[in-house]
Image 1 (cartoon, rainbow, N blue to C red):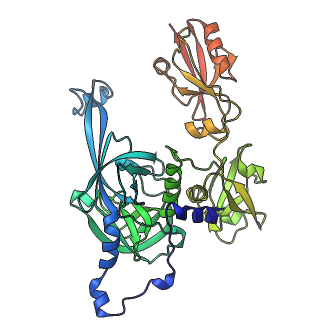
Image 2: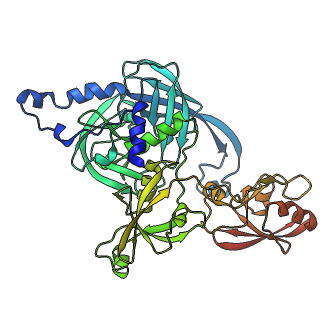
Image 3: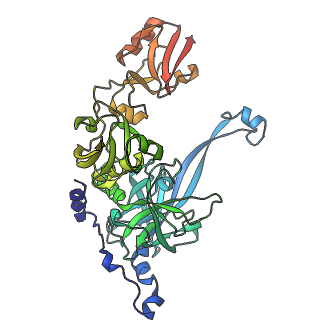
Length: 462
């Protein structure tokens, strides 16, 4: 269970949920005058500045700035590499130098330099990074006895709590801003892709604050600042932080040796129940996520879930969007069981659902085509749950998928992610059939694929 697993983390990464009774109104003029000073003195030393360098490839064309020819010759020109620098923040989570930051700060970096508040500097390496969650875990080289923050159980955070955002906005140096928690369970907002699950705060967050700390008045980390909602580029008082409970899972997996975040696979598709749907489902208020399809290998199918069922809670926490559901499953953790509450025909029932990675069965039989065929270098594989997850395919996808189009296939119009249906009229059902079908086709033929639900045909002649 999630609570048992969170308790097990205490040895490696203390998590603290302060009692609400500890949050008191200042009792004297002296306490009012001090303001947040004690909290800042406790928390700020564990917030660091991060300087990251990465090599970026770009095409240089004499027409790139021309309003007419620039669009015509887009994608053409000489490829040139340049060094890109980024500035952000991070939070030390252990004395031996485990640091959390955002993926967009350190992702794909070739060099990372971390500077502490006392001006000490460390080189750092990325242990684990995940673009979808926009989180990364770093290890500082030769670090010991560093100041660090304890994680608080973010499920105990309440709207209206006082918080501080600590980071390095605009590169001016470490800065502290104050506010309150202004919203919980924010999903489908923030981040470049509009994905994820966040705490919302009105504490000013600006560029450079990314990866910094959002702490409560006891100096415990409740979230990692990641983005703002803005039209002008400046802070408008709507900022988002990734909850500490998800950060704890990242640290756990990084310490276990994972380099990419392993999130549980539900094997289902669904959508939030809105007001219009609630009436048709006989609900007095909109709630939950209604399941539209379930894969046969899904752990939800294993315990009896069916399309049309509504998931209303995971581990006693309500879920009202698919993002909330994924977040709750991720917090539960791989290898555990989560208590999932189902609503069916007006009856609520709770089931123990296994948190698993997508099964890599049946065998994917990944194969790269040889030089003897026209699509030499293309890699194909049988579709299974693991491949569906890796390639972002529809849950009902079957057959053979192009894992890597290679150097030749794109010239014919084929793309990575296309599902092969047939070659010269021969149906393709297994990856081992592709090379043989291409050899039989010889120097010309037609390749049929399924792309984004559309059947397409591509002719080739060599």
